[in-house]
Image (cartoon, rainbow, N blue to C red; front, top):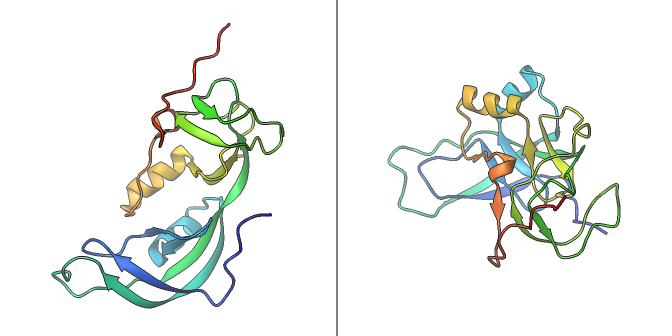
Length: 181
């Protein structure tokens, strides 16, 4: 069982919360929308890890704030999804609170109660520039090369946080205890 796939035709209604639409837009499930300039740059630089690249029809843009000062330009968008990578969360060196220990060594999936930084197990990363790691399939990890790509092209609507500094703790549980030797 898993999330339903978004099937063609790919049509969206967007909400604008700022002055202009971004190069990267979160969608439901694993899908993301990327602008045409993002897609072209990603392909031309030979980055790997995004799948799909199907054109999206923007039906409507709802302005959630007062009208933008300049006329709104709606870029062409493509629907993509980050691949499921081979990189696996290190079960010893991370600062993740699991509701119960993972039992499957392949997916390493279980309920996560809090994250206070994590690292990948050495030797598991397959070289993808953007992917979903085993053990945290709901999160997206990017390479240093992808980070530099985003900065070089001035791509918008993305916040990149080093994995060691990533915090998600909705119940204020605090970090998992450090392993004892």
